[in-house]
Every structure is written in structure tokens, then in C-alpha cells.
Amino acid sequence: MEMLRKLLHHALYVTNAPGSDTQIALGAIVCAIYLMVQLQAKPYKDQADDFLAVSCSFGLLMVFFCSIFYKYDVITSSVVIQRSMSITQRRNYVTSAMLLSVVLVVSVLGSLIFAAVIAAVQAILDARARAKLRRLKYMKDGKWLELEPAGGGDPQAFHLFLSHAWPAAQDRMRIVKARFLECLPSCRTFLDVDDLKSGSGTAEVDKSECILVFCTSQYFEKKNSLKELYRAVVQRKHILAMLEPDATQEGGLDKAAVEALITHVKLDKFKLRKKWAEWKDEGELLPAAFDHAPDEAEVKVALFTTPAVEWNRLPHFQDVTIRLIAQNGIFKGTAGGMYLQGEAAMGKISLPPPQPGRAYHLFCSPHNAGAEQFAEELKAAPVFVTKGKKASAPLTYTTDVAMVGQCDHMLMLLDARTYTSGEDTAKLIEHVHAAMRAGVHINCIHEFPSVVGPPRHECEFGRMFDDDWTPAHLAGGPTNLYKEIAFALKGVEWRQPGLVAVASKLAASAGPHKPITFDTPSSYVPKSGPNLWKRSAYEDIPVPAPWPAPVEEPAGESELIA
Image 1 (cartoon, rainbow, N blue to C red):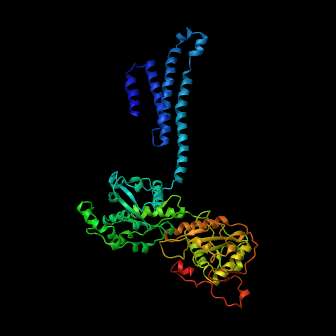
Image 2: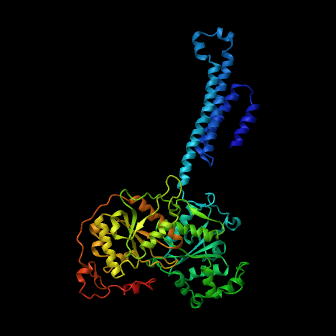
Image 3: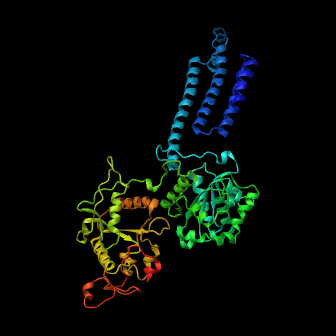
């Protein structure tokens, strides 16, 4: 279109009636038509280029428009002709060449300046919009990550293959694909319901660079899903396991549990090891493929050669999972440090000093197992601003209950030990009562269940509402511990966003103390036996330990309940 306009203006109309009004009129008509098309089509990828092109087209149209009046001015400016014109004719037809020149210059330059202003405003708006995009970026320079076309440009190749048991995991795989369309648009992601045209998916496995295996209990009971995994192992594809921590969603399997499901019996049940010979005879094996049918041990090794990631529904944990899939899966750990724009783990918090008249940010009960250790962990974590005018005050805490009124918050760590530690639990509840009577804000944090990383005494939050866990008066009414959301904590790569969230709450929720008046129950009788708040009232009564002694690493939920 641009070359056609140049052809018309620079070739055809130059030779058509040179110097005539017809030549100028035709040029003006072409300019007007081209400007109208340009305004409708907006053909440029960058909106600033559209603004500049429209301004230039408008300026060219004004040149032709003013040229017509310059032609008239040549005639009407003649003294001889003006003498033959009446006063009215001179007023109506004689124009000022100076005025025309001013109009032309102002029109052309004004349109360009106006376009520049609009482009600048648009650039600011685009920058703000880009800042909100959840894109993966390089840690070193903040540039967006981009992928080369999969398979060297093969339109049937994929960067990421989502292997899962349909329909149990379809919803989560749909979220994974949608997240990668957002954070890494250059990534081609295979999802069977979108991309499988025919066959069982093994051909697409061969043309995918990374296979994400979503390990649910159903996955290892379905022939097609296991076939995808075995095909990926045979072809020596890069495999990344993703585990589902929620047992109610076909999950709850850690690495050991998944490995226990991969057996010779299961491979032979679906005749997968025989498939190797068929694939070899049909010429489907890649040059890097196994030269024999892999056994269960080789499948297990291939599945967990790269550390597994964990699926998460909570947004700040899910961001970490998506980043790790890209980092350890799609890029195979070769892209260097990366982060997801807007990721909570990248946040830095400016913690103000304790409120005037107070000495500490936190009170950590010595009877709340792990609370003091968490305060130390948070204090040392890279979550606080360390430089500049917004540098954080050092995090301070005390374990002396006599100083609870000198604290902004009480830290309440909820895990499998909180309500299962006998006398320590009883004393912890007394400290909770003291904090409430002093009006100290109580921040609850919860060790969230996970199937990756070392044990952290984690437990389901729903356990807190069991009859033999949280006392009834602390689970409802004005003394409800859970009226504010408890911040979830996880381990390994997912620890950082939890720490940032806790630090953010500490920085934002400090305020005046609001004492609570309430009656303390004389005792609490859980299913497993009495737990006495005021030991002095029962000194002469022999009471068996209401809970088993604390253990460092509980063997399982059933032992805790017992």
C-alpha cells in the first residue's frame, strides 16, 4: 500500500498534466483516500508508528490542499487582474501567501507534534501495562524470556507436553497451559483436548522438548498416560514430575509413593515393555533412544532425574511452580536465574519500628513449638528492604510472657505439634489468653501440607477445628484465633513467598492494642483426655498426659491422632 501511494504520487501524477490543477486535485484525492484507509486499518504493530504515519499523511494532504490556494494566489496576486476585479471579488478571492504559509507550517508541524505527544502518552501507558504483565524475566537484566521455535520451526513440535490422567487433572493442566500463554507466549504447550488430532499422543511426545508428568493416583492406573511416560523414557526426553499435595484431588503422593506405583507388574500389565520392540521395528525410535526396553528402575530414575515440582492453588505458591517448570523443565536449567514479574518471592518489605511505647515486634511463646525458630528464620530471610530511606527496622521479638504488652503482635505457629503437646499446649493457651487480654494482635501462620522437601510438622488446616485440637472458645466468637486468614508456609523453593507474606502482614497490621474481656474455661476436655488451663486448680488430681510426648518427625497422621 505504501509503495502504491509512492508510485501514484512520484510516477503517474508527475507525468499527468504537470503544473495543472488536475494534477494537484488527483494527488489530494489519493492522499485523502489513503488517510481514510490508514485510519481504519491501523496497519502498524506499534501504535506510535500508526500515529506518526497518520500525521505524515495528514501533512501531505495539507500540502496538496494549500497548493491549490497557492495556484489561485499566483493569479489573484497579479496587479492587472486585481484592477479588473470588484471590491467584493478581491475580498472573496484574493488570499495572503503569508497566511497560507503559516497555515501549512502550523498544520504539518502541529500534526507531528500532536502525534509525538500521543505517542509519548501511549508509551507511558504501554510501560504501565507491561509492568502488569506476568512475564518470565531474566534476573540479570530484567528482559523477557523468549524461546526459539520448537523443533527448529516444525509446526507440529512443542516445547512442553502436559502428560496427565484425563479427566482427573484436566482442570489443573488447563491452568498450566493458560499460565504459560501469559508468562511465556513463545512457548508451544501440548494439551490433548486442544492439540491431539489423532492417535494416542506418542507422536507428539517425540516432537516435544519437555514432558511434564502430573503424578496423580489415576495417572498410574491409565494405560494411555503410562504409555506417554514410557514413550518419553524410551526416547530419553527431558522429563519433569509435578506432584499434587492434595489427597482429595487424586494426589497426596510424594516421590517414594510415586516410585512404589511404578512396577514391572504394571508395565507388563499394559504391555509397555513389549512396545519398545514394536517401536523399533516401525522405525520410531530416535537416535538418542534406549537400546533396550527400560525397566521399572530406569523409569523411576528418568522421572525424578530433575527435582520434582509441586502443584499449588494459592497464587503466590503457584507462581513459584510455574517458574520452576520453565526453569528446570523447558529451559533445562540453562537459562540462568529467572523470575516471574509480580512474583511474591521477589517482594521486599519495609518493616517500621515497633509502635511508640513498645519494645518488640513479636511475642513468641516458648511453648509454641517452632515459633521462636520461625522468628529467627524470618529475621535472617532476604525479605526486608536493607538500603535507602525505606530500609527496614530490625525484626525484634521476645519469649517473655511478662513483656507481651510491649509487643505489636503475637506469633502463633500452627502445625502438627501446636495442639498435641500436652502441658506445653496448656501453657501456650494461657499465653494466648494473656495476649488477648492485653489487646495484642495475634498473627497465625500455618505449615501447609506438602509432598516435596523435608518434613516441617505440616498438617491440614482443617485439623485445627477438630474437637481435640483448638479449644472451642478460641475457634469462634470474639476470641476466635482464625477470624483472620492464617498465612500458609511451605518448604524449599516455596518458602520465600510465604515469608514475604508474613513480613508484609507484620508491617501493615500493627496498631493500637484492643483488649478482649472473656471468661476462661476452667478446663478443656478433648477426645483424647483433659487438658487443663489452670493447673493449680487440679494440683492434687493425678491426670494422665492428654497428648503423646512431642516428637521431632511424626510418622504419620494416624500416630498423631492416637
